[in-house]
Length: 418
Image (cartoon, rainbow, N blue to C red; front, side):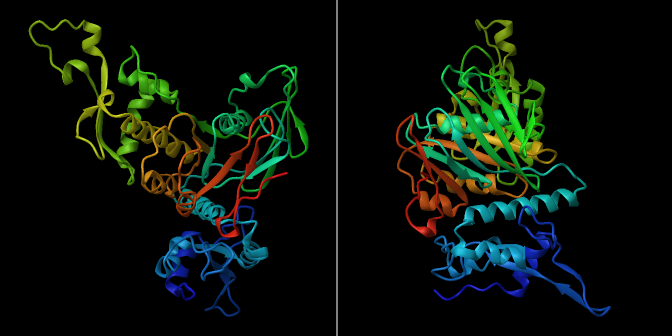
């Protein structure tokens, strides 16, 4: 394969989508400005390859063709200093997944400013477990826009997302156990780097630090969207979906317009209707008034018969519906506040092509949130998943000495923290 070069037109597209500003999260350097003469401009920007332009490059070629490597999707706009930095040491510090996240974050910031929305920008960049149940000490991981936490059952996948959520207001009650100490550090960009530290001792007492200063609580706000596994029972579909999403029923109904407006949605024609509208009473109907008034969710879901009700869908199709509602909340929230979507104990059926099916869904620039998906170890093509832009964090071993491994695909087998 020959070296895949960007055309000048492609470089221009990448630069304009970045607002002629370096896409490195801690850099706000503009890359274009006045030149020496009144009719000249000066440009210091570089369109860097995310996946390498040639075989053997710092981040591999991600199984992309030469044509694909030359497209705007594979370019990130950086200042000259950060373009050099990301390629130093064969790109070991900056995986393709990380650069895809930086690109998406910058484009989201530009789009937000263009729309007149100047909400705080936030990004959970990494996490180190200094001490805690399940894990060996000092286990570190870095995060991208889309993150897959992957490993055997009971190896701390849920712990990682619960501790992340707990840093920003989620419940940590189940970790308040005698003889357990928890010490977690999180690096957070907004866009300046911040270090957040959470400690909980064996008495359940909690302490925070923000950039080395003690704090009674974490003052940095991140909205966490964490849908729950559906528990089909006596409630109607509107109450059920509201409970899964942990939002009022009115909010659930209002999300339908947001779902319909999203280009990558896999469901259409959603509506909540009364049971008696869907199934009109007939002579001898024994349903009570309350049963006739129950709300049912009807939709056209890709891959199945149009117009089915939620409870008539397969488990895979119900998950798809819940993901659509969850991403609608996160997408709207992300326009105004830093937002994280956690999919833990929700996705139980990974069908062939799942990551191809959903990667555009999560990576789209209009989805200005981070996604954390946890899955039990199963047969997955991890290289293919990374090619879709997912950062893969692997939990290994058994409690209380679980370790974490993470690696850019071009650098060989996982390197385990010690």
